[in-house]
Image (cartoon, rainbow, N blue to C red; front, side, top):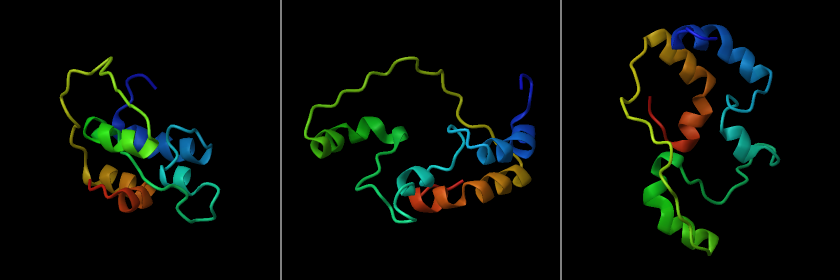
Length: 105
């Protein structure tokens, strides 16, 4: 897949990776509903992107000290913009994730 654009990846590969149950691409809601028949099976969701602001609440929730090191940190650059068709495809595939976890795209 070297040299493959994000647009082509979403259009040509992402649906197959999900249908083949490749774990990195499965919608996240499936992990919190997996064994509960559609009922949320977790008490609290801690988002990775908020990990540094969630250390104290996470420590309290787990009743133990939590520490997080910032290793292998990228140089930034942020997300790139992509077309409306790709945005619509991603929203369609991950619609329940966006709704359940409160994300906007």
